[in-house]
Image 1: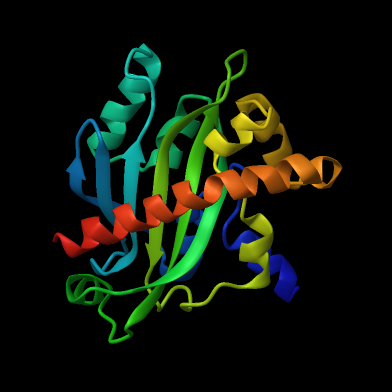
Image 2: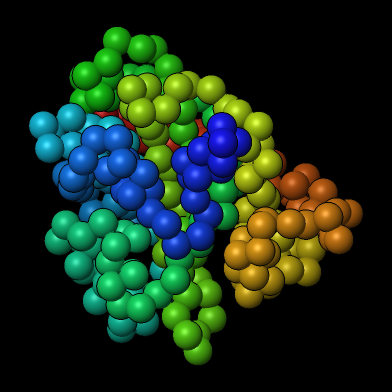
Length: 221
């Protein structure tokens, strides 16, 4: 039972992070700090206005796709990402590329209303797919969890879910469709372990750069 709960705390398929938050805190909502062509920055808050997750998204979707652009506008106006895509008939999956701990800046401690110095962060590519369409990445999402919600530690399940970036996987021959299918079937890569290991090597610098980009953004506030 413990292992099942650990797996479910960051579902890779369809079930939303907000579903998990609401199991603990009740109804949650987005408080949008920024949403432009490049970055979406929000707090996911409980009914008392306490932030339970800070989410920073580097947007990567094709702005020429009219339907996705319409969905993005709804997200910009307050809809949560997963809920917006599901409303339009999309399935969603997440490709986790790194899970780590970071030092909490004072302003984020205040939003979380905690005294803890560290928090857990998860960086993932948010995939969406509609019947008859190719899967695509809406953005690269970093979720920083309030220590009240998740302890500042990386567990075994986090390590098991950790994948290379899509860029790296594509360089060794996988397609977004391949990645989507594997995320939907247990995130298994054992039959392609050599290619997967090569992709992990290729992704290491990109992942460090993403972590650094997040850190610099947090420090700039």
